[in-house]
Length: 299
Image (cartoon, rainbow, N blue to C red; front, side, top):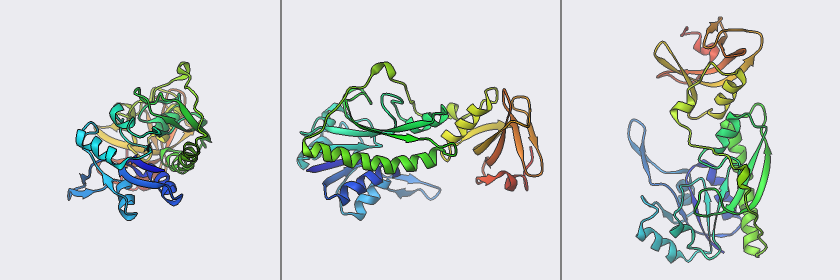
């Protein structure tokens, strides 16, 4: 079976690695164009491109997915299957090219959390369980017929970083199982229940801003869902502070937004109780523990 793999970030690499080591033929990978990053404006490659180069896999990096030349390139590979893991939305003219179709790995138990940020919203909403889904692409985003699902417990200590990494590895296994089913001709699909559909929109700066007038558990979950990137934040005396780790404090009662600090601790009031800040990043400085912060800063 000849496969073209579409993916960009670290999340996609374990799935690609599984396929390569399972001796499926990866004819090419499609990934995002190179970007200039940092103060030196050095050109950096995507994680998927780096893996492809290391494993001598041809790389396609179209600026536009609707470019006719790009579509012709894809057709010339005569691939049987397209696999999409953490990539942009494909136009119908692309995902209908292979004879066996195109399937996507999505970071939720569809139809829950359709959209760009399913892992983040599961944490922000305080869910105790999430999962992954493989499904065949249809024109409407994240609505295609499902192939396989894998449930996953969300631990109390999980944040976006830890959950993302676990889901990446579990997702890789799910992708391989899905390809095995398609290859054997034994794949069965089932429709999504539209009545259960919920959105997982892109994370914006407005979403990242902490509202101290809500319950402490909601603030705590917002921090978990945005750590380590992009980070929940608040403004104090016209300066921005990002918060990466918190605890709910039932002992310290403060008004919403009120700050109490000791030599080693910082508490900020919410609508019911308070949040204890464990890791913080002042504007223009590095991320640090609260104890480190209090050696040189004060509210």
